[in-house]
Length: 445
View (cartoon, one colour):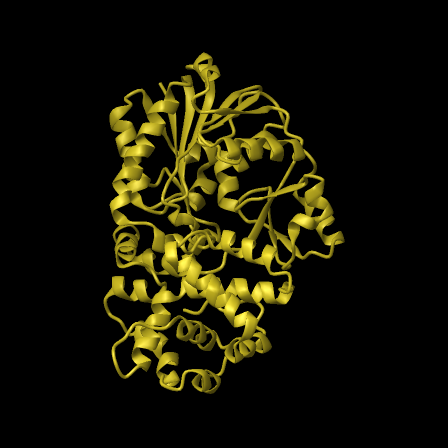
């Protein structure tokens, strides 16, 4: 059940127990995070820019500790509940100490000197208590620190796979990059990173994925400056591959492009052939896409607002329309663990309705015989299979295409979804080591 930091530094944990600036920094970050469950990455970036005294070891410790509290909140609180003689809300300092004790960074006796009113041996025993919980939903919710409603959704949608899925979702994500084949192939990138003293290994599911084993600032490398790679989860790279048409010079519309990670991947797979129109409602993201495209040597992509009149001239012209729809992001909980506390079950029907509307809006651009790819970074059926059922019910001219037609029978079997939805691409951290992604392919008849 543990999710211990990769770099355990007992001296830093002991410094937290002592008090001082390190403890104060972690405590302030935690308290600011739980106020609105905003993005932890943003909070960390602001603090590290402001506090110049924080070195690389301290940065890693602070980051892992903050993420650790977020990922283990229910587990921590249950341990503290067992350790108190009277019912009361846990204190934030107690939560911090409990994480360090549970992850083996701080001896219980040391924690007892700071908070002597707690029975720290009972904190340590919390994992045995959770493992003995017979109710599956409750066990998952406590072990992986999920809201009850989300644990219930996991069980309803995934059955016996719910527990390993939730456990994998609560682990730290690997650092994965995509080799930019406009600059060089994967082997060339691995060789270039090795010269910069970085240990890597090839991804399993795509021919462009590289997993970085070394802990370093990748964006300071010569390879990054040269545009040789982009940070991108391997599951996201699979979606881009799925959304790359086979026509010699196609017109592709990436309808919800954001900052363009998949747009750039599609462009590289097309070797700058054809045209890619990347649309979004966010001007800042589109400007970021343009900047990234220049660095990546992409010349066949153009960024337009989704309401730009130029899109009207493309009605029924696109060979492929890619709808990477806005969603809950449950598939990316490894990277954004705070999202579990921010989202609400009551929001799910709204997401599903919006996803169907976006597909309807995007389909006007699709040529007869063209391909539409619907995708999310969600693992919830209400945003995936249930939306697909609505798409097929509303749009009679869209025909579902088996995943095997795009990826071949053997590969599709490895990347396919549940037995109830075998023609979908469905990758998850427990089976594939990727973030959770879903995709379904349609052809316009």
